[in-house]
Length: 456
Ligand SMILES: [Zn+2]
Image (tube, rainbow, N blue to C red; front, side, top):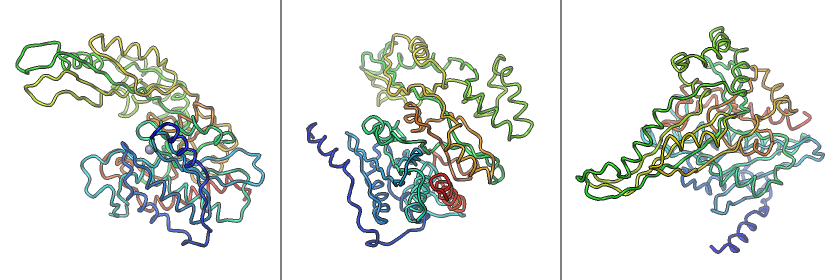
């Protein structure tokens, strides 16, 4: 499509859609039915294909008389926006955001990942935890507010975005770039990324994520003369790439305690057993030792190093043909205060001059979301009835980073009390959510949003 036509199409699509009268369609649908329906929509990213998902959510909003805006990225990826307005919006808006896309299903599923099934009290389907269940909880909270007669003390926004799983450029990144005014009055954004501590199916603490690592995604490429595979040539593209990557793989990780990570560990220590408190007490000593990795439980090194993972290799097709190019995709995750320029330089030096490095994604540094905001305190007051709240740091990345880059407080919160077994399916086979935990989490979200958005 020519540029001007595309622009006109975008503007048209960005216009508010007329909502049908509230009584024209059936009223509410049980959240579990909604989740089943949402999981059945294949939004595998790439390519994402979020159109059906956006329509499904939009229809649910329209059925209850709520207008929506469909904001299309220039590459045609839909983002759905709806707002409930308060009469007097002196307090900033609460934005509920989730992503519609999911990662590819991959092998190992016992059932079709896009035909949700119930087994042993759990609902299986790609996106059950990451993160369509949260989307339905947000939707339910938003619809409940609209249905109730209670006056809002702040605006509440429902936002479903595209493209989070491949970096968010067509989703949250695009919206903040193209429509920053939608977030002008935002007091806080509530999205994915919360990591609750659950022991024997009971909540130990709620984790509201306030800081995370930064992605630095690289493509490493080598070229060389192709030809018959039987010819001795040590400077082919694959040989060059493998030599360069070998040096990267052998790089010893450098352990250190980044300030947001220290704050996180110290907050957690208040609610964990003596073992963890002792670990936090010895943290600096461990990090300064010769082999910190050997003294840390699995998973903990992620919080203490800039990680480098070589995740994709491609070169050639046959054993007896030398290809002319060879490529690798490398996923680097930086601690919040790492100097990205210096780190990239170190990687380029290690890789050497036999390969080219292209930066695919590089997230700017952003300060952690503040915990002294009025909304964070409201979340705390509400959630503490059930368990303490810990501001957390995660080694993963979410769309929250786009908001934090613009100094909009963004908090990762999961209302679902899930243990390690239930979380194992995220980005893997047989993703599932216990139905009880889902239903309870929806209730928690409805009540939390009501508590912080109304005078009730
Ligand atoms: Zn996610």
